[in-house]
Amino acid sequence: MSAKKATGAEAPHYVWHDREIRFDSNPKDLDERRGEYKIDGINSVEDTKGNNGDRGSLIVTNLRLLWISHKRTSTNLSIGYNTVLHINIRKAKSRLRGSTQALYIMTKFGSSRFEFIFTSLVKNSPRLFTTTQAVLRAYETSKLYRDLKLRSSIIKDGQLMLLPGESVINTMPGIWNLSSDQGNLGSFTITNVRLVWAANLAQNFNVSIPYMQIKDIKTRPSKFGDALVVSTSPKAGGYVLGFRVDPDRETLDRAFNEINSLHKVYSTEPIFGVDFQTEAKPEAIEAVTVKRVVDDIEIVQQDDEAPYIPSSYLAEANKQGGDREVQFDQHLGLAIEALQGSTTTQNLWTVASYSSIRGPDGAGPGAGPGGAEAEAAIETTGSVFSNDNGG
Image (cartoon, rainbow, N blue to C red; front, side, top):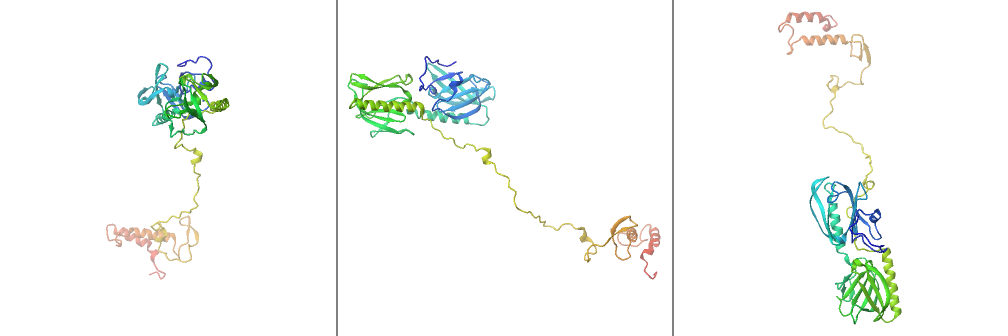
């Protein structure tokens, strides 16, 4: 279904993409035409007005907005920028996001008005609003590339004020505009974008005809002699403009061939005037990945405090010659470091037992309760402490 069905075959150079609204178009109509290019694409956008709850993709080109359903590509929208009256941002009720900010687009095509509501399903992403507003603003400020203009302020000090990317191909004086009975003398300025005629005596008496709006160019006789006739498309008002080229037929033919040739070149590579620059584009992950590098550094740990060393508590702090020989002890049944002199582990065990029965203050046995039992224990082990003389 389309808002307006075309009658007859469309001319190859006919540009409907920015001037019509089409619903559920053929997939071929969604393809980019010559001179049309994609500016941005937002993957998760809901058509809240007509397909509430249906997720789709919104494509922003330099001529129109395209919305295509993820479920069925046959469900789609094509909204030409020339049909847009105004846009704003208001709250809408979405089945997928609830009450949230949405983009409202009010349009007019033919005698009908249409309202579209788009809701971004990506949280905290303003791309839907910023991109659409910026592209529509660029489209509105570049209409001289696409629209026929009469009596506009395009001449300054006798020179055409050029548009960005526009270049003058040729200028031809002695061109009569045959719109009135007596005609008006002026000149042609032929550029890569449009054909401009301006009167010599009044700068504001002019006409700017973009090649985009030219339907055909012919030469035919008139009451003023042979004339160059330029017909515009119905979308541009369907004007038929006649110009007499002085001084002779040869000059007329040269003007015809040059304008006709530029019109064909423009039809192949049209310039619609909507330029854009992508800012802050995220880099690919490969470009920002930093390879891991192992530092060639040896970390030496230093403690402020000296480490705990049990050997510092040994009585033999100044022993020479290192550790003593390891030998098997029959009493303990273990391998131990050899003891000094005639000391044995059995003797050391006896000394430990003796020390345990003395009082905590060093008092001898009998100084407290159980003194007699302690005295008997000492007599039993007294041989340990006797000297070599038996004293």
